[in-house]
Image 1: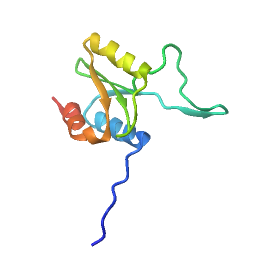
Image 2: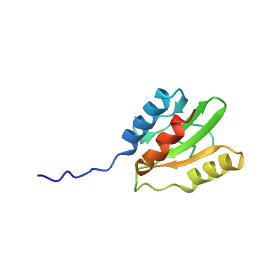
Image 3: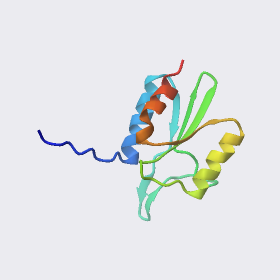
Image 4: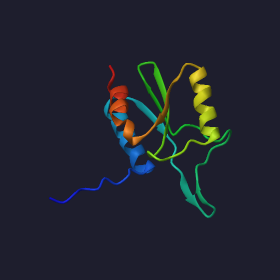
Length: 110
């Protein structure tokens, strides 16, 4: 029997999985995708850098999450946004593929 090597999940693939699960469970989803420009990949935003990758809203519950690969690192700007949301009483945080069972539980809650 051959061994199957589990390849790491890329952030873009992980984002698609999180968004699909959220929509399946009735969440309103906001995610800004970067676009390739002549200067490289950019996300067109104005204001402070590091805004979380997804904003989810359902039944009066707001969640913001920064999506990272299992080995991805949070920037100081991303950490500052998550801290500001946490201080405002808004849940979320850093979500990684290895946290999938908890993500499923969070998005399925009734």
